Length: 355
Image 1 (cartoon, one colour):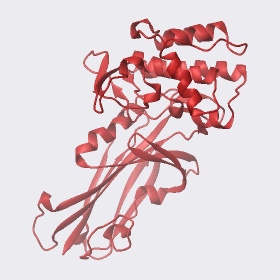
Image 2 (cartoon, helix red, strand yellow; image 1 turned 90 degrees about the vertical axis):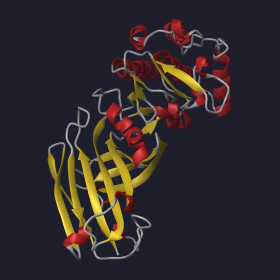
Image 3 (cartoon, rainbow, N blue to C red; image 1 turned 180 degrees about the vertical axis):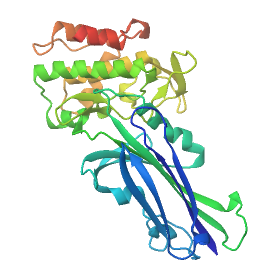
Image 4 (cartoon, rainbow, N blue to C red; image 1 turned 60 degrees about the horizontal axis):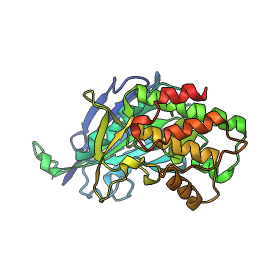
């Protein structure tokens, strides 16, 4: 007969990385039938009760957390207890993102749901650690996070001890973030013609966002129109840090397999081979943002039109300047798209040039 246990972790970070952690462990087989587990979960200073209930003394195998035949069916997660899930916002960085309303404060959040196994825990927590580093109006805001682990022990409930080999884990990381209205990609699809005033403002906001990221020694590695978010006031900010990494040990690059959207890759990342090792730098982020800005200034109605625009830029060929594009904007983006990475400006220099 199997016994079932619930291990619960909570992180209540608003500014620092993992500065608080709650861990409680309960063996429901030992507590008996219809056992109840309660603990307080503090989020942003608000006391919330998380109530987990599981019926013990059952021999049903765990197939799915949501399956009526599973013991997890009786265990209510914090996510389902505290949030009303409204719609799917897409995927990114190893997880899916949902638009949710919190039942207590009635505010809306973008909640990223990241399932993972033990081997991938550090990778799953990477985005959380990076997000919690930023407190800036031009970076998608991180509010709080928590981790839920449901454990199935296939050993007999009469056994005095349980071997780790008998345990199976269902692990999920939840990250609550600022809800934005849409991505820049969605805005392109809805309205390809921004006013000159909106364009000028958005260029500055994107440059300021990247400066904030680079100031924290983070390389984003996946800057694209899909990862530029517009809040409900139209302000542009960079988000989705699922592929981002910190620069460590004084290094100026991150050596890894190619990642992110190839369309926005700098020329130095274009190496042959499926599992090609490349070096992401602040300069590769600058190049990717330069392509986003080029797309904003010279919009195309089709994907192929955008791809051709980028392909020409990677040959150092640019469209002719029109009346909607200032000399300053045109010159700055050309420098951001320099084929030689050493010739590209820093994020601070881009921001100063556009201000």
